[in-house]
Image (cartoon, rainbow, N blue to C red; front, top):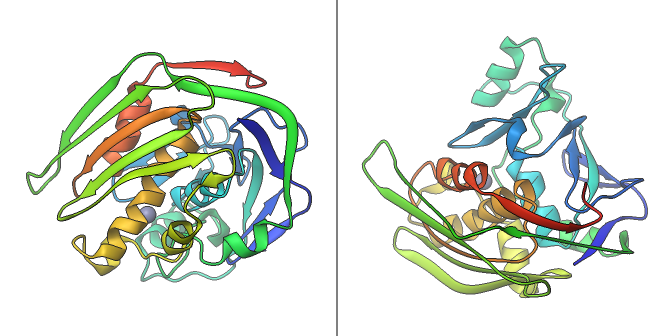
Length: 262
Ligand SMILES: [Zn+2]
């Protein structure tokens, strides 16, 4: 797919999204830390990354990565904007105890993915003339059992260039099949809007339909955002703390890469 960044900075709630000067294909840097599987330090109810050199940590990065890739942005620089603490939030307490400042938490307080981002990103999207391709080298299968005994399973199957991402997802009693993510992000723009507005299952309950919409964004964040995949089939049956499953699979996956990505 074509490497796509932004032509100008845009503000979306508690973050600012800036153009990447030298886009490589799937490179997203949040608060100076590259979002890649090696930098992930926590993946269960949320996903955190840490710079191995500075030890600076960044919290809830999935609610940045999913929305960007869902809207076709492959490369960007993101900075958190929050200036005040809310000690009811566990990640704020954790960040405070580490001596960090509130902008290290890039997830929104209301638990939504990134409402209305689709409306503001269209005027700033900048497609380059460079292409890249990332898939898994061979089929990846991974399973986990959560603390309540629910089994989660994921299979990632390689696909050739220009296939895009095909996602089949199940979250407890709700499921959606054949979600397609291509050159311009999610093909179903109505679904994209619903996902961006959906709250986390950890605030609303895992059996709500809204929780499934939210989880689609999280799965895209972990596989396409962190894993940088452009072409693959993903079949996933999620359990409770499902980032253990999806990031766990991506950490184990061997990928093949072509194009500008170094
Ligand atoms: Zn989430």
